[in-house]
Image 1: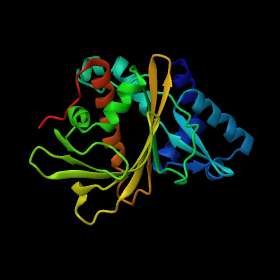
Image 2: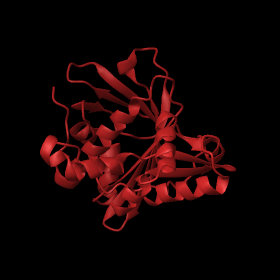
Image 3: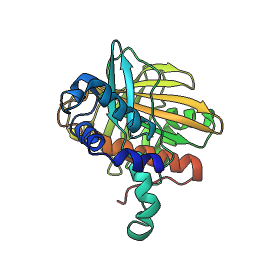
Length: 247
């Protein structure tokens, strides 16, 4: 918490966070152009933000891109505000940052990371088995099709309509899943995109990184859906209870 307060206690660092909130995945050069300071000064501020886990960075080729990671702020709200205002607030916590693995898909449009206290096998099963996906998905009670190479997975809403269709394109056992992302809830002609789960075991916990690629304009709202899914998955694996939306 001290690192978060220190990071926020500077107008230049708050300006960097505001900039990433408006446009995620900016390079150092893009951020430097918005502040009246040297490149070295911007790098120092970004380092403080990364140390506080408010910014995650990813190197792609010669460039390094930066992403806003607002989840530690949610953890802070849950600690001091939620007990009074939102008794059933999100249960996401211990969120950390810095993606280390590059993919062949280029620069992601969105990234999120969380730590879940569970085994690698348990997390892998939750992300690949249809019955478990249905158990923790925040809106769908029915999921058809396990995540297997070239297999179709469909998420079905309570009214019987399909919400999302995914096809598994790559699968590295217990470490990485790449899938298409077809948002049927936006209509039959909504542009498809791609997403990746990366699993990294770390002692008694697993770090889960969610990456989303090729998002079309107007699909920025997917970030809220990912936050809900990650929170419900974490709760499901740690407590046995998912965080379903009220019907």
